[in-house]
Image 1 (cartoon, rainbow, N blue to C red):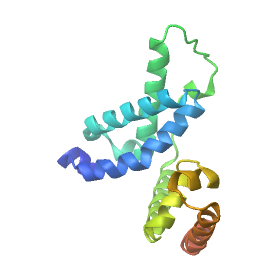
Image 2 (image 1 turned 180 degrees about the vertical axis):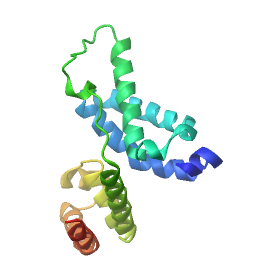
Image 3 (image 1 turned 60 degrees about the vertical axis):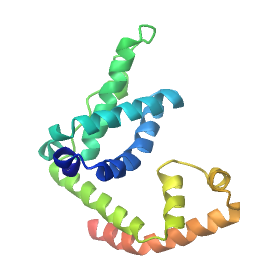
Amino acid sequence: MQRIAVNGDRAAFRALFEHFAPRLKGYLIRLGLESGRAEELAQEVMVTVWRKAATFDRAQGSVATWVFRIARNRRIDLFRRDRTAQLDEHDPALAPVAEAPPDAALDADQRQIRVAQALAELPPEQRELVRAHFYEDLTHSEIAERTGLALGTVKSRLRLAFGKLRGPLQGYLESDL
């Protein structure tokens, strides 16, 4: 985030975009937006992240917390502008997000770094399948369709990737317990 704020680093933003855009879209869909509108709003959020990167304050929370708060606020703004939408004041999605305690936020940041490192060690073809499965929430069949690979190939590559991830991540998770 700092490289984006200080230097306008496009490569850093691209990495941030690739990481958050699919998650934001899924989050917004779960909040009730249709897929196309969720994608539009996710892109608007990422433009805001680019423009306001200098206002990010790590002391206030993680990058993920900041990005998802922007998305939540944009969703609320969208519904306020749409006169046909009726906001339910008891909707849990409109309740303020509870801030995680600093130690929990640090643990989450460290876990995120460790997962990213473990993913980076995978061969590119396995890494992309894992991202499609977990970050884009695609089924094995959908991945096979998108990539043109046989379903059995998708399954075997994912199984190999999970085997490679299990070691580094299992040790990390055990140390947390």
